[in-house]
Image 1 (cartoon, rainbow over the protein chains, first blue to last red):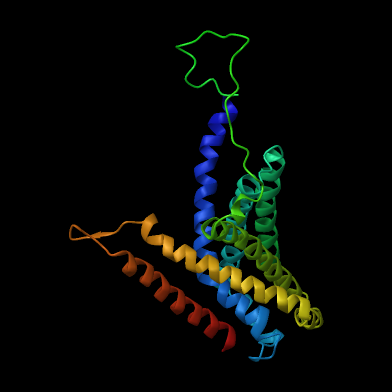
Image 2: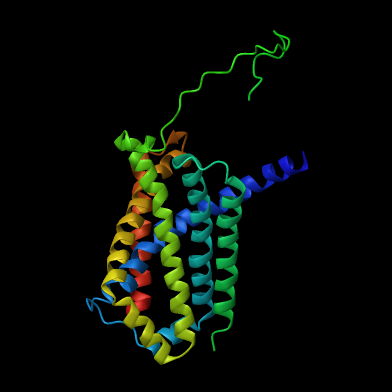
Amino acid sequence: MAADARKKLLEPFFWTLFSAGGVVAALLMPVHIFLFGLAFPLSWLRNPSHTNALALIEHPLVRIYLFVFCSLPLFHWAHRFRYTLYDGLQIKHLNEVITVFCYGGAIFGTALAGYLLLTIP
Amino acid sequence: MTQHGTRETTLYTPYHPRWYRARVSTYWWLRKWYYLKFVLRELSSIFVAYFVVITLLQIRSLSRGPETYARFEERMRNPLIIALNAISLLFVLFHTITWFNLAPRAMVVRLGGKRVPDTLIAGSNYVAWLAISAAVAWFILR
């Protein structure tokens, strides 16, 4: 009974994070992947120097931006990946393990992002 | 096993029937384009998570100094990574497009008692996307 009530409370919370992460991923991910994943490595555009990149990332607003950019999409992944395994591949007997792996991964990634962004010299 | 519908009409008997349930194949999503689209959309989340990991590695190498950052940039030039990034971009674009096209169904906006047309809501999402992408690119490239 208590577990049921907790589940009812957590489900909308995780769904909200999923939805917010979906918006962040939809709006911001394509330009990041295009620039850092293709345009800079393939020399289509000149990549920012270490000095410039560090100067950018030292700004508090950029750090908050990057924290949101890393954290929310991970919760988006956790929610979708969990249901892909559940419905798509019908791995239902491992439901609890998968849930812990997905949301645990998202929480770990969020903590790591916070740590990395706070410890920039 | 479900007891649905039997509670008030029948008492338990040892010969209680087993409900018929059709087996669903593990590959049910290959049957129709619509189903496949759904699974591809869900799989896009893996590439979203992948690029978050790349970004975290980038932040780490950036704060460790120029040599470490140069090594990160060198690794990003690996053809396998570039291929993976190209696939990721396609999947994430697929996510973006399906997400914006669903937006009018997720939020119904009324102005002056009339429902704002779906194309306008989806359209404003696309405009916001282009504006934000341009702003992000400007900050990174300037």
